[in-house]
Image (cartoon, rainbow, N blue to C red; front, top):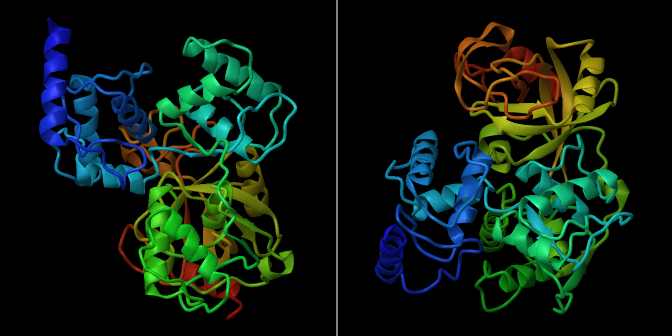
Length: 434
């Protein structure tokens, strides 16, 4: 009887809420989802909520029940949305902007032990998200660790556990919202790109190619193509970046070009000499940098100006400046080597993001987090004497509790909304202005 009622409710919902799929949405088929709905998309929604930390069930279902509704309400409250428990336009857009629906695209039919391919990072990230990949670092090599993780994934979902990512495994990953695929793509390559970055104001013949790619992806609607990268192209790039869960800055740089390449639209090769800079761009936090970052999605490489040592961080919080966490134990070790341990010392650094080199200043004192507790919960005894409050420790297993600060031009402290003069001085050093 319960299943019959659910089925009736589903039918009524799908007819009344929308009878046509949303063509502009890549991941979900309908305009809204609410309690009582039974549909394959509910698994994708639950997986997105799980990535954000508000859905804790290990088993994903096609039924939108009370547990999913509570998770949706928690998500909506977390991001200042109307907490009605319904996945509607504003909630979908927030999930998309956070990159919660999918991690990446797969272009081959089979991945197996011994292979080297850029897509393998996407496979590993999907497996890590579902809990079977335990490696500290994502790589382009399909080794024993990846094979074991694939077998565990296959057993978990009742697939033939051969350790090979083939048709049935890719299909399951797609159904769970972990990946998209571009298998067997026979579309024509639209062009070859040679610059590292294309942005508003640039005039170059290859801008036409970028506009053609954007038109194929449904974000560029003009009837003709030009060699000028103006506001129309910038907005189309922003829409493309939102569609594929990238940092939204309107600049066709590293990650955006890689996505266009993985979709099979372009080839490109950039001269290494054009990508290196002795100093960083002196970019304003409020006007430029903040718009380039997506919380719990953006990964950046940091280079210490004095030692030239590099490590990776993920942006996990921050409004007045960027709050970041090291990606792995090794990254934490390198950071500590630079600072001589955890430290509040302000040091000039270069931040590599989307093909750009940006001047910044960083401290290396983890604070406001507890490694052993769930991220996003209210906890006691947070690191660096922060006491009771929100747990800002999202990256587990990196031997660092909480996050550290990266400041950019005109960024401010959280505690008093004022500029930190020592940070601003270090940023000028990184920009070659002092």
